[in-house]
Image 1 (cartoon, protein in one colour):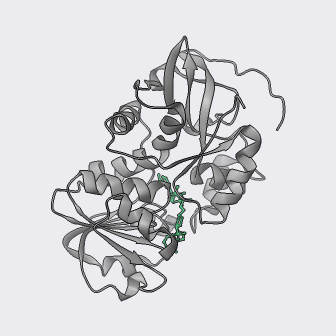
Image 2 (tube, protein in one colour; image 1 turned 90 degrees about the vertical axis):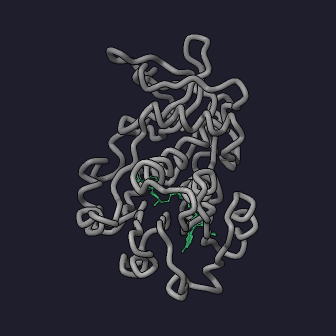
Length: 290
Ligand SMILES: NC(=O)c1ccc[n+]([C@@H]2O[C@H](COP(=O)([O-])OP(=O)(O)OC[C@H]3O[C@@H](n4cnc5c(N)ncnc54)[C@H](OP(=O)(O)O)[C@@H]3O)[C@@H](O)[C@H]2O)c1
């Protein structure tokens, strides 16, 4: 933790007093410089060769601006792991009355990703069979809940420890990958979403029914470049429209962001330890006012 100069808003920006900020797998990648296979050099050139060029990371936030409760995502400028953030005024969304600040900050990263990939790109339809790998993480838990809300029949893949959680989120069926590796599954799915990464694409393609779509949320460079037809990869959108959608779902009780509040900004390092362990469940949030 360091003292830093007050953020200086540029044209069109405002300063938000932060009340809750998420620590995500995206922040952890930028901190560690560990990216999906093949992205290492490209990503390091963009983020910073010897460490992140942006000294303050953090994207998904909630806070106060001109007396309003607001939330949003800071995009490539980051800077949300702080007490105050300068951010484009038109990227902010109002937090609905019934939604807490921690829930708002927690909900944005995973659910915007799930909306982007499942609803807007794979165009998941009612009655389709959806497989979600990594169902207890930020993206996976959002994908299970969104799949259910869109009327799909959801199969969640988790460790045994998280099987009950995935069922509670609405999965029709839970596969414990410790007992049944996905390679051993013999059914077929209309949409397969992998939120873990690392497995060869052909292993997932094998699981697709005719007309099926494969969503690789953590694709390596090769799969990202080759993604076309049934294969969907790339970077999820972070628009204010998506953020507003997310907060509306939370308000209506249609989305549980699985919030874990860890403490103040000095708990960011603990959050990174949890993410790096690859066992994090749901979403981690810190409160810069603590
Ligand atoms: N393309 C994009 O725009 C975009 C957007 C957001 C995130 N991402 C990427 O998507 C990935 C997931 O992000 P996230 O925030 O959901 O991560 P996360 O919350 O840190 O995911 C943690 C979960 O992964 C599960 N997991 C670990 N190894 C597993 C395995 N072998 N099989 C099944 N599940 C496993 C763990 O569950 P168990 O303990 O049950 O195994 C844990 O609950 C990250 O690589 C992130 O960088 C990409």
